Length: 299
Ligand SMILES: Cc1ncc(COP(=O)(O)O)c(C=O)c1O
Image (cartoon, rainbow, N blue to C red; front, side, top):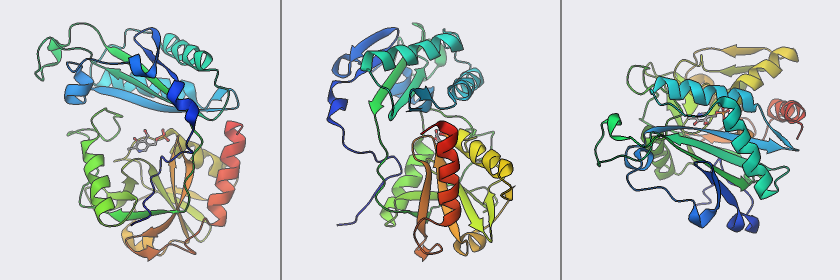
């Protein structure tokens, strides 16, 4: 038995059996929030999404998430059919219906909608987009530092499927995750097309070396909102931070490594490709950045 963990592991919460979800303007019990098998999201992964978190009554950086959602929708030529304000209202309405005040996570999804026939052409989606919000009680519970394995799946160039798109189709990342799991790790460390360390299959990646915080240039990874907040927090607190190219040699020798993402905030990394990173436990810089981030989101 491996003690495999994921970066999106949460405490069991029985209340999640009775949650209400948002689907196309309606708030429905989970079992009734169903989409057609003709939906472009189901059939082709043709949609975009955002993950947001509720801390003490506030959805952290919600305006930035909604802005990124609309940017992605525009890039794939998908009309959401709602204003950004209306999307935020839908989130708040779902939150209210569920009586959630803190420690909730929402996945906001927009697909090209139900197709008239089961083929790829986007014009076959004629009924308008499908807009859905899954909102769950969620308190991250990641029992130990994450183990990463480098995989052969790359973060691609923008002219194939731009890695900055939070698309429903995540097959490249899923294959990376499967490869990492088969190598005995929890999540995949992905390189860019030049072989520099870039990001993981579901989170952004940072290392700490001699008091400096390094992350990739950002060219091939998701433009993570948590990533940006960590960089800003470093700058505001006099911590040297660099967005730069670095390789596995720099990475294995790092004092600390951590991941960032809306769900887990900052998650320590203990092992990469069988090499222990630092002490293998959460390091002081990661702990400091976690505290600064907690203050920022009001956790
Ligand atoms: C591939 C990938 N990397 C990183 C992130 C983290 O981004 P954020 O900090 O905005 O949640 C996400 C989240 O959607 C992601 O899908």
